[in-house]
Image (cartoon, rainbow over all chains, first blue to last red; front, side, top):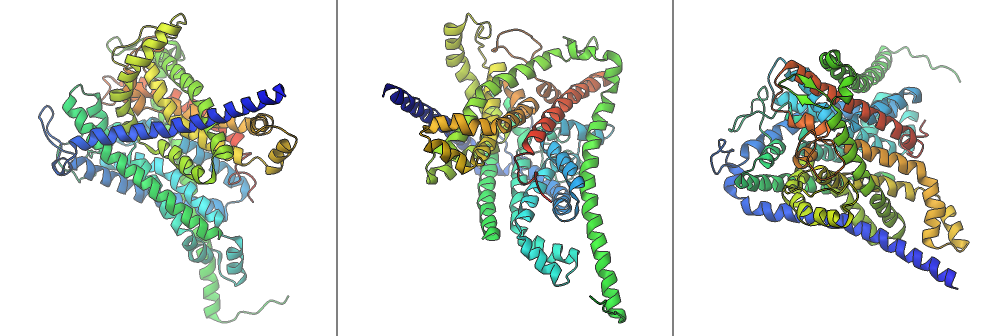
Length: 282
Length: 322
């Protein structure tokens, strides 16, 4: 009987350990979110959201130039990444024979796993050396990050489209391309959209690709993409490296804005994704 | 089956249009897929080519070179390789058991209602931008570690050279490793959960029917069945830890020291590159930064490919699809 009790005790212990591990993860999330929220809320004000950054060394200032810049950078990156990502996904699921699809899939996964700083320095080498930093260089770097995310989400959705739909369309004599564009894409459009939102959330928070491509910028609102665009992640990064507590406060406020956007977008996208998946699989 | 004669020019045109449409869409999508391949090729080529200057000057001795001196034009990567290896390894040691335990909780233990919520929360942890996590690391976590955790580790385990004198600023390898742990736990935990859920029910029920406790079932059935998948997840986590630049740059402090203690400031390959963003002095320095990037790239490629070879066997999306 003591052997039985020992086995039960070990079992209990292990169950407790894994429960505690899950609690730790949730607690860390809560601690990070709460400390960013409580410190950021203090410095966050209407002024902060609507004024551009102060000149270096001067008090006050806000982050409107960074908000506008991030919106431009991410918007442009979305325009670059989404068509390529969706088309790649269509090729992989609808057209490519297996012996071609597998290597391309490998390449996409490699792209998704490359360190973002390496992508940043690649774009630096490609577009910035010999020129200057620019908004489109930053967007291009962000687009490289978004591309595999969009492709993967689209692919997952396309695979969920019941093959009976595909076959019914083809059996009616509908051409392949009209089947793809008229039947398959529309039924997975929800998934593609949410994949895009997920990719946007990811790109909005990326700093490493922008350090080398769009980090030396003016303190005014800037909408010219041929010049370096101010942006929220680089603002937080540079302020956090400064010893000045006033700048730290602004960094917290900017971090709160960024984190709120990213978390809300991720949660929303995941909820929508679950819904459109249910719709497709019934 | 007889062939229907199509004489009407309208029908012929439609058929031609249809074929054109097929070819066009096929071609367009193939071009997009090829663009992805070309992109990866261009990344590798460009980075290797631009690190050429530094390679010509230092050759492979760059990897074992200990100094990074822009004034004397001497550059070496060893301190950064050391920083990368130590921070990533410590992070893996901390993260792996934690992540597997979370995966087990989510797949085996959690009540149905809790499972989805906790699972999503763990995934949200991965969504926090690294620059925000780094800001928290430098201003909250670092001071906490240096005032509470590091002294107590030093006092109780100080005879192990890993736990040397605590740092006052809280910036150092150890803080970086803790931040990296927070970043890779959600990744490894999510993959583990999927792996554990993929173990056939009959096997689990068979073990339970034979009188095994839940933990014995996990140890005897689930873990052996998913061992290589877990290895792949850990390698993916390693790749992430090695490549993370921003949060590490914020908390690691910077330096070229190589030593036993985990607490002093250091630099990783990625953080060295990131902290030089305001412009390198000479062409040779830029080229040397790209050499660091090339080392990082090769490490990232290897980790990714190895993990993929293993993962591919488990993932239905990438596995047996026709």
